[in-house]
Amino acid sequence: MTSALDRPILSKSAPVGVVVRPVAGAASRPVAKPSAPHVTTAKLQLSTKAAALVLRTARVSGPVFRDDAAALTGLSISTVNRQVSALLKAGLIRERADLTPPGAVGRPRVPFEINTDGYLTVGIHIGYKVTSITTHDLQHRVAGAIAIPTPQAEDPEAVVAQIGASARRFADRWVGKRLLWAGVAIGGRVADGGFVDHPRLGWEGVPVGRLIAESLGLPVSVASHVEAMAAAEQVVNPADQSQNFLYFYAREMVGIAFSVDGAVHTPAAGPPTIGHFPTGPTTLLDPDRTGRLEPTVSDSGILYAAQRAGLEVDSLDELRTLARTGNTVANDVLTERGEVLGRTVALISDIFNPDHVILGGQAFTDYPEALPAVSKALRATTVITQRDVRVARSAITVQQKAAGAVALDAIYADPLDALSYTA
Image (cartoon, rainbow, N blue to C red; front, side, top):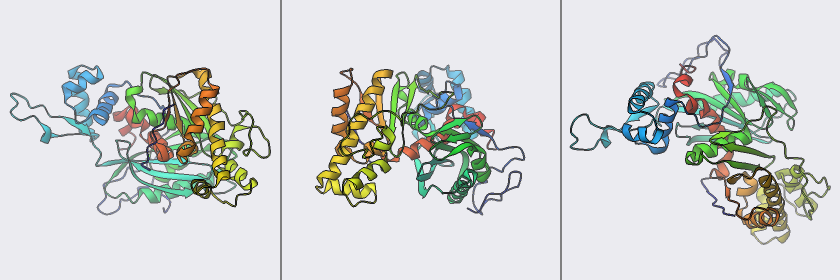
C-alpha cells in the first residue's frame, strides 16, 4: 500500500424576483430572476463538450497555445479557435500576450489560461455536526473558508435556511468578484431538483437546492458528499480519467463511491450504504458490541470507545494528542480503527476490483500514525496482492474540495450554457 499524505491543510437575501443592489465598488452580482431558481443535481463527470475540453485544457495545461490545445483535446484547430473566442468573450479564460514567442513571423501565437481573477463559486458541505462554507476560483482552489456547527432544529428547512443565511453573509465578503454558481455536498440520497433524504439527520424530501438558491440568488447544484469527494479527485487529477477507482470515505459517516472513465457512478437508488457492514472482532472499539461499521469507526464511536476505556477525553483532538504523547490506550483505540477500516476497504475493493483505491476523510488523514495498521489489515484481508491504495490528495480539506467540485460541476461540464443561468 502506498500513502502520500498532503498537508495543505447574512442578512437574508431578497426574495426571488427582488433586485439585490450590489455593494458599492463591487462587480454586479447576478440578480435573482422572477422564475424559480435553477437547481440541478451535479453530473460529476469529465465532459466531452468542446467548450468543456478547451476550458479543462486551460485549467490543467495553461498557459497553452491553440495548436497545442487542439493536440491535447483531439479537436480541430478551427473548433479550438471558436471555443477559445467564446470563452474569452465570456471571461472564463484570458490570453497571455506577455508569453507570446518573440520574433515570430506572421500572426502571433498567444497562449491562454483559465481566468482566476474575476469569478468565484460558493461551496457548502453540510455535515452531521459541522458545515463548511467555501469560495473557489475557476481553478478549484479554495479562496476562503469558514466552518460552522450544523444548526440544530426540528424543521429541516429551517436548518438549511440558516446555512443559506451564513453562506450569504460569507459570500458578501467577496467584493469585486462575480459569483457564478453554488454547490451543496451532503450525505444521504439526492433526488432530481436537489431534494435530499438524509436518514442520519432525519430528513426526507428536503428541498435543499431551492432553499440555498433562494438564499444566495445563484443557481445551485447538489450532490451526495462521498460522490462529490470522488469527483474532486477527478478535478485534481484528470489525467487518470481512463482508469477506474473506488473512493472510500470515513469520518463521522462512512461511504463509498465508484468512478469509471471519468464519471462518478450515481445510482438512482442513492449512494451505496456501508454503515451497517460487519466489523469483525474488536477489542477496544464498539464496546456495546453492535458489530456494525459506522458505530465502530465513526468519530463519535471512537470517542465513546475511548471514554469507555477510561480515557478522560471530550474530543478527537484530545485523543490524538494523548496518543502522540505516549498514552498507549489512546494509540490502541486509533490503531484499531485503522485495522477495522483496512479490513473493510479490502473486502469492498475485492468486490469492485478497481484500478486504484483512494482513502479519504479525517479517519485516515488526521492520525497518519495509524496508516501502517490500515495497510497491514488490508494486505492480510485482500486476495489481490498488488492493490494500489492511496490517501486522498485533498487530505484535511476533503469536505471543502468536495463542495467546490459540486459548485464548479455545471461550469466544467458546459461552461457557456452554465453562464446563461448567471447573467
